[in-house]
Length: 430
Picture (tube, one colour):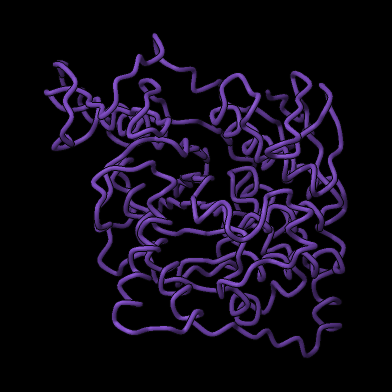
């Protein structure tokens, strides 16, 4: 797909118009941010909001949600936020060295195309309670349409499909790197949307994808991010995190290290999930308190960040979306993390074993939908062939292809991150 162009004619006039009408949509931005849509809704904090055609045209768009896919009814909206761990741009080119050095994340050959951040946001038609559910990236789930794989970590559904499609195109003689990259990413987006939909049992109406560099650019546009840690942390080798306990202001590189760290944390990836939630809450707070929403210059910078780093599902009118959010009066906002049964090792990989039925019940309850009835299951000995359905769900029980001893009990998915956007409270996390 061709890079979109943004008509910036009359920019000063837009500045003037935005100063007089920033209030209503600023409220919508903060509400959306609190719901876990920081990278997406920040996009609308731009002085060009009033020209929806110009602003919306600045985003890369994706048709990864099929026209015949299920959709929410009654005005409800489910949005999947994808944080893509890649060191390459939309054309497959490696990010500039100065950017990679700031990311502390290796070069373009590292990280692959894992969807390391997956947040499913439910906005009911009444907008009285917004729920953002984080999906742990190592959940071991079935995948479809990926040659050689019946199951994988959920984060890999994107990259594995991307690679498979690119291999197929290369076999047909396609050599254009840009075409291969874009076709592969489109297939990856469709794959991760389908996989999340099958796991949760709910429609996905919209999605937004933000890259690793997008988190950095967002923090830079805000002048850093405030966070609070329960304990001091040090992970210089992997993420670059090296912070004391307590409340502190992180520069852009430190903020990225904060949301990337998992080594050295008590609950590993689960603690990292809570950090992502805390990051989103802090960003929303800063937008509300720092005057960013009333400064046309800052808003323009945020718009450029959004256009450079975000891919939106086709047909999503962001201006109208924020207009609608702005009509809600202080809705309740809640972060959750999906439960897991236990940790295990499959084919040499650390994974989370999950129960799809339990997850679907959790999602339904959180979203105010009818809760599916629980079914009785029994476990038998582990087997080496892939199961017909989900580990932890079938009458034949969970399966492993390696001999391991899972941790006892149910791993702690962590308490919900609670941060009061209005009062300015910053949640403390591990």
